[in-house]
Length: 175
Figure (tube, helix red, strand yellow):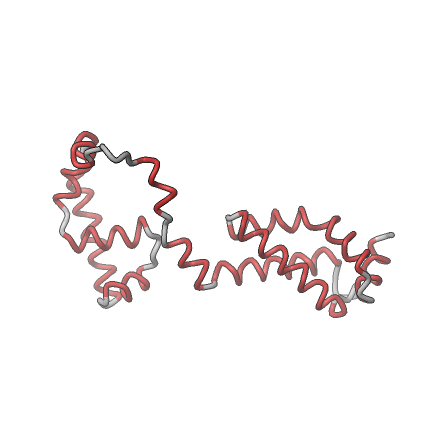
């Protein structure tokens, strides 16, 4: 079947046409989604959601308004952006899974001596505890300044000024 005929069949809820459309476009759509969400598993999930929407909303497509691929692309892009903006996605990004990092640490390692060996310990020890917390939230856990403000229960302006002060302090320590 030609693409126009496939689209007409899709609008009539023809499963064979849907399968062929999926085969034609899924690889490209997956690439677009994965570029936005930057996670293969989540991209696969969003891809499934997109094609469910395509099946359910196929009658809303009109060739007079644009090409089918553009319509499909817009659905995909919006679904991926919605996923990235979702609270669950943000929380997953903030919370690193310990299992991903456990291979670095062996049971018999003395972490204090290792960190001293790299010279990290002397820099960390010179920072104020609030700076350590703030830098951890903003730079290692990916919080926004607003999220850090809410987590630490301090005003946003205070987070911004402390961040600037802490980074300057760290910069001076490193020099």
